Length: 238
Image (cartoon, rainbow, N blue to C red; front, top):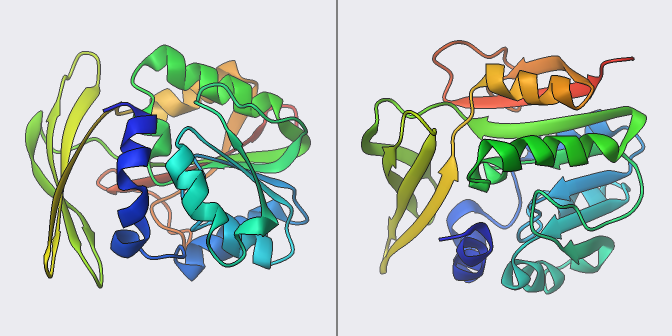
């Protein structure tokens, strides 16, 4: 499944599985990084992050490749506070410059080649203000070339990933297994894993440098075995 197909097939279920709003720690940290904004979210989805950020008084723009996801966002309370555009990464079909550009919830990994991921970072860097920040949230490499791992344990559903990884290309194939009361769904999608060191190189090519790296939204420093990696980049000339 391509990124836009994954979004279209998941739009009606996403908030039920993961919650209509992102965790407060995530929204608070992003709002702190954004300062007075404006904010651009790449892969805005159902607005789980964008709408709470806009509710804090920030000007928020979101792009997504899925018309169904953007329709869901528009129909939510506060959805009209987020400016949206249909755009398939790595292209970013909006104008302006932003204090914060964020690509969250592994959206960056739905780009299936190194070239596409690098181009996305290059394009995002061009949209930053002089003091702007780029935030990328990705999971660390899966343990082994294939297997099953827990991905989410929520109030309404549990999510497992059955995955296979090509160690040479770093491309992965995942079957997302979602189950809960009266619910069983399997959603396939493809992507490409990326190491923190590779992210740093992509950022360097875009004129950025690493400012901070955490393993959660409470800003805990990342360690070698951290399952989640949150990277914050700034302009190298700052």
